[in-house]
Amino acid sequence: RFQKSADAEATGGAEVEALIVTAQKREEDIQDVPIAISAFTQEDLDEQKIEGGFDLLKAIPNVTFSKNNFTSYNFSIRGVGTKAVSATTDPGVSVSFNNTGIIQNRLFEQEYFVVERVEVLRGPQGTLYGRNASSGVVNLLSAQPDLNEFEGWLKGEVGNYDTKRISAMVNVPVVNEMLGVRLAGALTSRDGYDFNTITGNPVNGRELWSTRLTLGFEPTERIRGNLIWERFEE
Image (cartoon, rainbow, N blue to C red; front, side):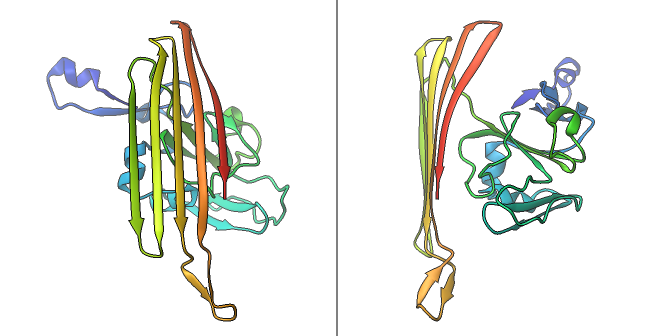
């Protein structure tokens, strides 16, 4: 998230927006983190048209991506990754969801929706993120419920190849400042960009949807927790 620079306020100088990240599993200004890191808010992702995991190549240096057979992929940072073709092969880049490592994931199939931030750490991160972080970490942090205000939005997009993209979010505070619920979802549908001359059918189309339900609670000032249920299908 962003916050005003205290130094700028004290001196009356130009106001500087500081991006707070949790790359080291605690909240810090990105300028104070001794790691090569790229971080994107939901607004950044929308502005740069970063829709899914592999789109990170558009905005991050030293990164390459290729999709393998089965469920495996090769996301390489600084040339380090894995090209093994196996459904049980571990990646060379750790993928984390809310700072929790997930070995079997769909980050590079599904699209980003209602996220607070996406952080990409370049270089070995095994001390904080454990195994499979020899080349770096992709950390996705979902947006958490607002316990004070009701809000919601719906966005739609249409394009060629019969493309339809819809995303929506609704946030409901159940008990003011103590309990809240956030429901979010996204749908993408389009025909294939390629054409099979033998069968006469388009190929590489997409039909995918994702939904996420988050229950946030804060019984005291010292305790804050979230329960998250998410489903993705393509």
